[in-house]
Image 1 (cartoon, one colour):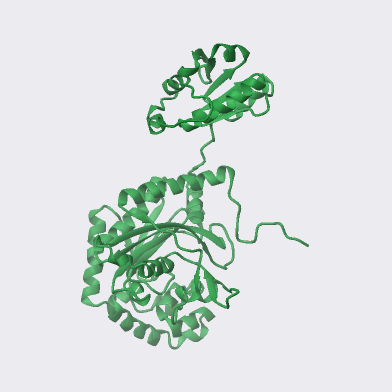
Image 2 (cartoon, helix red, strand yellow; image 1 turned 135 degrees about the horizontal axis):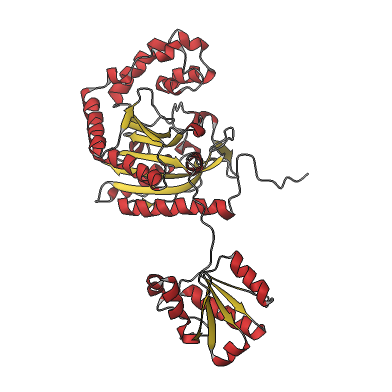
Length: 442
């Protein structure tokens, strides 16, 4: 029996829901432009080794990837996150040759993970993310966090906390891993299967366990700060100093390691402290990676970025009762009487649309009353009425809906009168050279 339903863990977006997404995406594009970021779009799938590299211990790689063999017997994977594909593109296209370092990129993209669907966590989820590639600099770390906060705060979110930690340099992490393996050598036997795998692959990831996080051995685990090199300590202190000077309050969390293995130095999460968020409290998070560009065959360049799930962001907005839905409305609804007037309404509607007015009209020459009902449902600001007399005299009746003000104007004055009423002159300047087919309306 055919299954014509949306697959589990996915959703259709339309109507008022899609308008929320559009508002978020518009804000993202405005703020990334202000901060000097350029958009990048990478394929929805990559060769599997782009994501599954060496002895990766993350759940994303080990449990959640959608991997398949194509007709050419190649192993391909739907991208589970944005960073790896962007680094592949950065190296393959030699974007590192750009003399204006750092390279600042952003993306808006679907990502695919096979996991248990729940509110704010879908099998196809959508991410806004940024990557800054070039020199390692504490000011860049602070800027990345600041940009993410600017997005969520501009949307109205207030119940937020910034968690931050450092994973240090390679020497720091190796010393710490040795200490963790010694600490967990005895208790690891009663930890979950994932932690037992992480013990062999990357013991830092044990600290991110959601099952055994209350175990006494977890609580008494060594702290990474005790194994940091002097250089790593100094770098982290510089990041904290810049954030403080920027009036960004942070909380240092020793157990914050993030969910992917490539992070080094600064890692961070911005979480919602609103009680309605439940366990899915992370709004966005990310960190620095020193070795990823080199691992893909590029030069020794550092990078930093974050990922922000749009679905999770919408849950946070809902928890704080912030409604992004804006009722759809038209600037103009053309009411026409008779077939000849309806054909004219078609030409006039196209002309007004090309001059920046959201315009609707009736295709079917329905009754005067039915058309005005449609104008009400569309929440039109102005009705333009065209009948036999108006057609004969080259005129139109304009009615401003909120005040019921009504004027009769010559055809060539329609645009001017609409601009006067709706205060839209700034839009029309952009379209002033548009030519239309048929009627010129000048």
